[in-house]
Image (cartoon, rainbow, N blue to C red; front, side, top):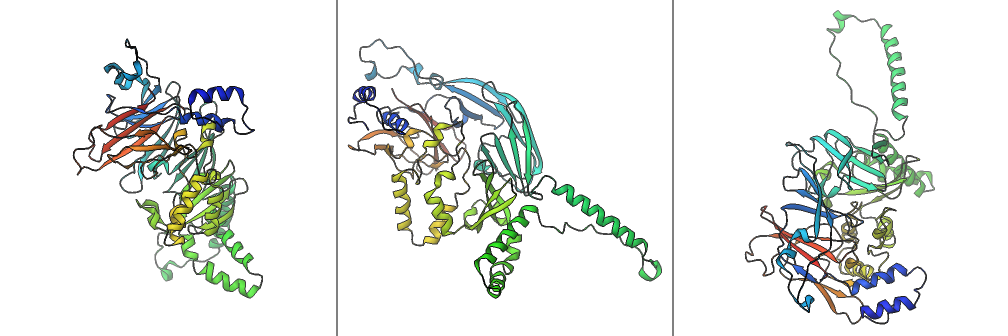
Length: 509
């Protein structure tokens, strides 16, 4: 590692010293200790848009119009201005440089929703769990051309924080809560969405064909039998209209789940008598509870395995599902088998999560920056924080439930910015972190302190107006958008009453 904290000395040292094998990128990231977004433009003049995030490659800034009907995409550009004084760095920025357009150039604005539709930007959907029309658009970011779309009618897909959708490389998983289907789509290079499989009622592609052929055979047998049964209308009374019966079969995924649970319980005991007792206690007694489970959420673990979260119907539509019991299953899409099943409070699952957290944060092969997000399985400081929280917890079971409530992870929910690398900087994770979510705003600046000696304060991020909030009764929330590569960040502070937001730009001057 570098012997000096001076930027110039580090550049010379990089030229004459070869880093140890496998440490080239980590060593290069240490330059971010010297290059920080320490300057701030408060309440910058900018369009009244809902700024969402930077793309993982840093080429685009995604935003939406306030009426949630237009997609507006910007390209980050670095600040340039002329200065006639000798010490330009000591001078204040000219007024023209303090505008949003000095840092971002609008590429295009695309209307995606009609007058009766809204673009989901991460907020919770209100109303009953049935939406007349949900449309997913496949858009090319380079020029804003809509290449394909997929429409779901009279369905309910949880779009809050993208909970009902997961993208992994070219595979897209969409969870239909209403019909209990997991739709797996593939994004082709040609720009089309192709159905790969639908997991739910059926697991294999020919399951429906097999059941339909079987039901047709049963219908012909029943019809043949009914023709040989004499009908006495006078004795039996008038013919009544037959009420169509519900499907007597459980869904394919539910049958796979129940079969796995039975096999696991049987394998726990070698004695047949004990097996029967264990099945009565652990399976048959809870049989209806297992049958009533529905799919809440799903994520890819790799191209062949899904992590599926099951729970009650009430928990699926609740604003706080953490208070409802839940289960996790690992499903192999190729063999159509459940290969693991855990309760939410499972110690075994927690140990796997603690040691192999990065396996739950699946990163796209096309996004190398996502491989350097700090977690407690790749960063000693994050692991110490997790174990500290575990030691402070009054109940280990409640602690496990709280930690496991975050699974399955939402895709693209973390920022790969090096300023969230816990081996480089220390900061208050209650106020800011790599996780993409709103936080309670504070008047105090958020400090980023060097993790290594001399542990000096490198820069501060302060959302909201420079003078602070005058009306303390108004509750305000803040969100932070960090560029994945450049020393550039946006802090957006807004109230809950749709007042104009305060947008600050943090950059290296």
